[in-house]
Length: 120
Image: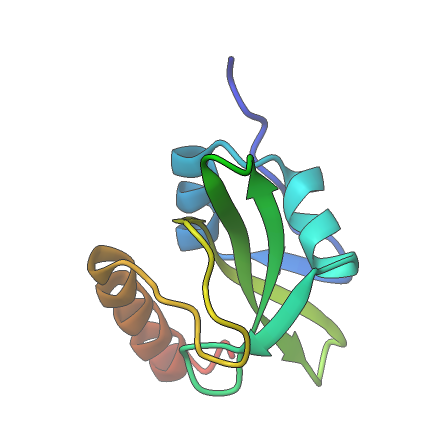
């Protein structure tokens, strides 16, 4: 099944990284927006100035969490979706979400490039 990749709107913009991760973890645009609107938990994101929201998914036997990291924009009021990922298991409340190493490296490059281009 092919997933339709999201397009930027007035209020929500998507990074290439977030689109790639949505494809990797088979998250639809509606799923990511649902996590934003009705999270089970919200934490401070890994990247500076970001927020991460989580929705509990999976089963009792194989619990997982679906995470979305985003940035609230001030100037063109809205939200920039930075990343989305699935975490196997449950993370402790109040602690930063654990992000896989490959995703962390991509995020650091993405944020570095965004700051150079003054996008964020």
